[in-house]
Length: 358
Image (cartoon, rainbow, N blue to C red; front, side):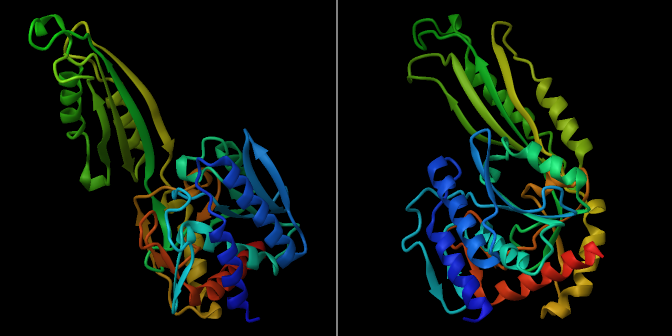
């Protein structure tokens, strides 16, 4: 079987093993399959461990000079795609195929030709919800590695040299209920408080620095004839600048209620710091030099709004992201990859790792 065909077959098995982040049994199953595929392709099943109950796959060195970083959880509830796997010429569709099961297959096949005493392939299962359980693992291994290569999908075929940092907040407003018709003046209206906060939040963004502050989900009140006693508001904030993220954090934590009897609770904070180009450009330039030897005419680079585990790694070592699948549709119904790119992208990864290890 041709290498690209073999990669595609293993990818089919991985995609058909659906693995939404919040389904721990499904995530355990996909990690077990990763171990099986590893045994078949490299002769080494790697190691399955748990971090605060979350399954993690690890193949190779425990003190790696280079880390190939992946995740095998997806945003898709089981049954979201019908059929789960669909091939239309060079286009292959399935839940999590682009984000980022194809990247794992590319890394696994690369590991067949790499020195596993110096390189590690790691796959986690909580990336889509912020990596709360595996963040420390990622940061610890990044502190000892020369480089962390992230197999997240490419963007229009381009490697990712910058990512926004992410912050998530939940604001809870405690008011006081009262009858909306008989004695509304005796209530403390949580809806009024949360509306004012939303208006203030929209003034915090800075488009010139790529800073966004987005009120997302909001709830308030219980019945149409009751002054709302409770409201909640979720906020997604992102920026390419850590200083900007800290500015937003300070502003949100400084929010106070209008009504003296209202009370505000603020949860959350900065999740992933920005992945800055100072951590990525040397490896990107090296990858561009190697691209033709892998059968890729050119790569290109981009900075994107979405975060990844590369954001954590970039605090401690060199990082290059977007080395995974070529395709489109992360978190979207048209999620797909271009099958013909699997082998050349895997070859590029092998060339890049070997060059770093010289």
